[in-house]
Length: 535
Ligand SMILES: O=P(O)(O)OC[C@H]1O[C@H](O)[C@H](O)[C@@H](O)[C@@H]1O
Image (cartoon, rainbow, N blue to C red; front, side, top):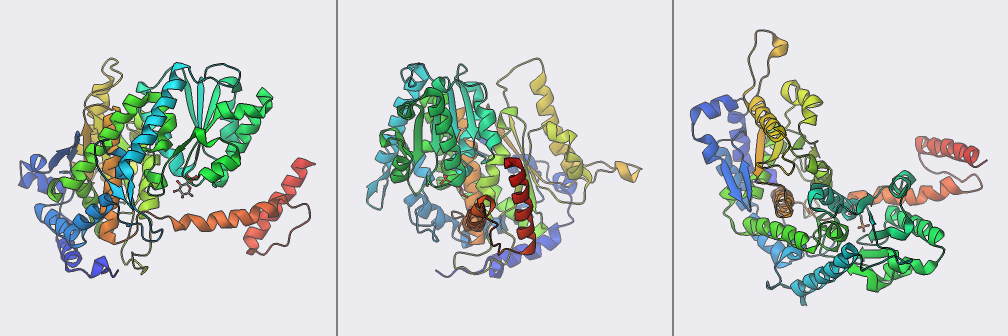
């Protein structure tokens, strides 16, 4: 494949010229010029409304960005992804998270396999298991019903289910507890199990590869905790289930593959929570709600696949992001949900976006000549307003923001929701238009761009649509940059070095250290303290 560096395309150069005309244009003027701007720059799809009018764009900007997307082959790439082509080139894999949410009567064959039948086969098994646990039919080793579910996993095998569980807590089984242990720091496990009765606790060991250091360490610790308390190795069968693509490693660990829920190498870790990786979530919210969530994902998938780009939410979100990232030089994007249930949403998006588009070479392996994926961050509103918003309003940086809000609340208490939403609307207004004042320190210059994303209410369907919106935004951007959004080689070096350092920390004899002087000294200092702690 030979891909033209994006900055060498005439469309990019046209955008560059246009940027020089646009960089000092104020949102005040853009709104003054066209009274129907909000109407023209609002689109809706899969139950999600996107008002992108408070962005520093004109119709011309959008035309240029849309032409760029077409020139970069976005249409063909979307079709290739949904078809199951091996678009993850460095790992030679299909990228088919969209197949996880196809309805049962859909058809998709990939590499000779009927993907839809496989997906629904696993979903049905998950549903049977989830119902058994929820109803108390699945009992622990001593016959007690399961009251606590702990998912052990990290990265994509943790962030999706934990974010979605938090987001959908209102729909979850309140008589049970759900926890997510990820960090290899023992504190994570120790605090999760504090006060829990092992006889009532189920561990879901989630790992695509089943080789991840953190997850296997936590899984072994969990097994020791459980077997130590119940006094019988056989207890593992009733208290451990696995979610993985790697049956061999699962049985090596000691989990019967009858208690394993499968997914496939065409599901990337950070795209995996609509697969069996969502098992703990399904136990929490029940199979019906889980399927509604998949319908929401699918609705946004279809919107992305079939809607013309000028009305396509993920495409617009992606292209507007590129406008700031590459032309205005914005380094970050803040995602600010005005809903407490979405408190983990930006942490989830960090992996989705930064692991996907944090790349320095294109599909041909040549250095990318432009900035790729942004730094994603954020906190739920209104908390952020009393913390970091000051910098967005009056600092020297350009920080594009996505505001996410809901027209209805799940907790209608007094006038809380009016106050919450008033704050959200006020922020986007203040950021766009600012305020003049005689004292320089009071001046708020405005012209800070925002997207407003509105949905009716936070339910499983809406959550699915929102996640898919961001998945496809990331894909749109990766396609324009010409990078592989589906590998993550950058995480390997640190893992390899850690594997080398572990025995150096643990060796009885002083090891020969061949790192740089800083790393050597840090290791020696740690060994010294470790020796003292042991002594
Ligand atoms: O699911 P696992 O195989 O345990 O992988 C867990 C995570 O670890 C890796 O380091 C990757 O960076 C992530 O993309 C992945 O989600």
